[in-house]
Image (cartoon, rainbow, N blue to C red):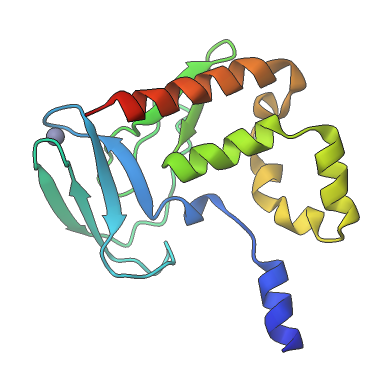
Amino acid sequence: MADRWKVFRDRQITVHDFARDVLVVCPRCARPARVFATDGTENFYRARHWRMVCPTCGYHQDKTSNCRTISTGRHGGVADPMFGLPLRLQKSCCGGKLLWAFNLEHLSFVESFVAATIRERSDAVRAGDGYRRMSMIAKLPSWLKSAKHRDEILKVIQKLKDSIIAAP
Ligand SMILES: [Zn+2]
């Protein structure tokens, strides 16, 4: 019991948790499409069989891949790790920086981090496990953590969300 509790507490959110289900731009009709693992595994590293499906035009592709590399898009935009299709959720902001997310859950995660105040962060640390749970947050780029960018980033995130809702 004690061990199971520890495993739960030590579980860290990483960017790979979001890479199992990715919103991309359909190469045929340019509408939002999904790339996801068909193995039924929750673990990005264990997934081998991947599918890309566009709900708008029906275009789909299957691929078997052991790819484990996630490009952070230092050059140009960010693409999904399996098919190399551009992420649907990406937008430049804060003077040439690129805000991106694999899916809406990932975008909400970034949003809640950016919206969080210093007070909330110290509460997490006081709870005793704050440092561990912030493993992914620690890796976020510094411009994203900067308070002066907060309003602009939150606006861009909202625009991205609206663009998905508006898409047929
Ligand atoms: Zn399509």
